[in-house]
Amino acid sequence: MSTAGAVHADDDRGDRSGLRTALAGLTTRGRSFLAAGIAAAICAYVLGQSDLLRVGLLLAVLPLVCAAVLYRTRYRVAGSRRLSPGRVPAGSEARVHLRMDNVSRMPTGLLMLQDRVPYVLGPRPRFVLDRMEAGGRREVSYRVRSDLRGRYPLGPLQLRLSDPFGMCELNRSFSSYDTLTVTPRVEALPPVRLSGESKGYGDGLQRSLALAGEDDVIPRGYRYGDDLRRVHWRSTARYGELMVRREEQPQRARCTVLLDTRAIAYEGAGPDSAFEWAVSGAASVLVHMLERGFSVRLLTDTGDSVPGEGAEGFSGVHQESADAAGLMMDMLAVVDHSDEEGLSRAYDVMRSGSEGLLVAFLGDLDDEQAAVLARMRQRSGGAVAFLLDSDDWLGEPSDVPGPGERPAEEHLRMLRESGWTAVAVERGASLERLWRQADRERSGLVAAGGGEGS
Image 1 (tube, rainbow, N blue to C red):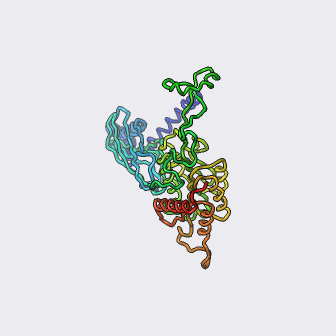
Image 2 (image 1 turned 30 degrees about the horizontal axis):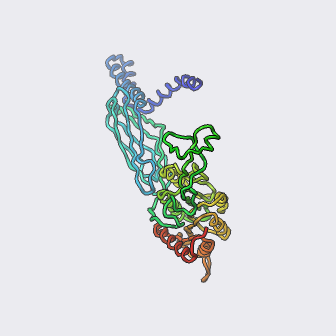
Image 3 (image 1 turned 120 degrees about the horizontal axis):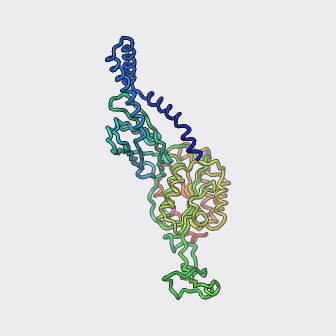
């Protein structure tokens, strides 16, 4: 009730503001006609010429009528926008479709359309639409593209209307806008056995009893069509209704993807920086493991994980892989550097139990963080690390003089000694090649040790 009262209270003020807006939209031609009409009317009054007075009134009234009609018309034009698609990988194009509808009973004049887009998506699109008949519709489209991931607002849509005589031009800005999500690039990866698992179901290191043919003793209510041989009589007597034993679903193999986002761990910026490579690598592994049927979780150094709808933060058994990938891609589209100094928060999240396969994308490390990663290895069934050295990515020489071991090489060795399958990432390296290299190194480690430890 209070909102409606406020609207009615502002009606008069809105009319006065609309009159000023309409008069302010007069073009040079319209102002000239108005000035000429006023001058002719004054001269006709002084000279007593009624015919001149009629001409003056016609000249003065014409731009005012055009302004009034145009002012009412601009609120009778509806605009809409549609993205196809709304989520695209970096470097790919999306198409934006604009639609204008004339919902009034009068035709419009010339329409000039402009949509606001961030500069990283390309130049600002502008269109000129011819006269639109009553109830008519016009559709135009343009393409946007970005090499940088992120979420970019599109809009609001701006419309400039002009009357057929060119007396007045008015602008209208629509309030609605859409968001284009640009996700990291995803590289296709080959199926390998990094943790001794060939697929998401059935071949994991940790199996439930159901995989051996055992039944879950937890009963559920009888449903039409259930086999009567599965009736659990003890629970039926206890609950007073027919209960049956449930067949336990196979346990999904788990995979945690750890993304190091610490600002102190990376140097440089831009699409070809080490941090962007790590984000793209994490996205590629997430999509690959979901396609193989794994239950996947994305974890950062801040302790944040996505998605959180399943048990312990993993994507649930009944959750579609496409939905889970979409949630994680949305996070990776906007992930930025953190202010964390270490990886202890991520380790605290993993302390609750074994996490299955662990794949980490790491920046520069120190001895303390290497020790934290060694403890993480003990909580996983298999661990693979891709280590990015800022000196290599920036093309700068190492700070360690002489033939001594570089810090990155030392930390790489420490990770391997603690059980990680650690791979150094050179500038511009292909993740597909490093993925195969990690599989070969793990296979060599298992052959040398007689098996893979937990």
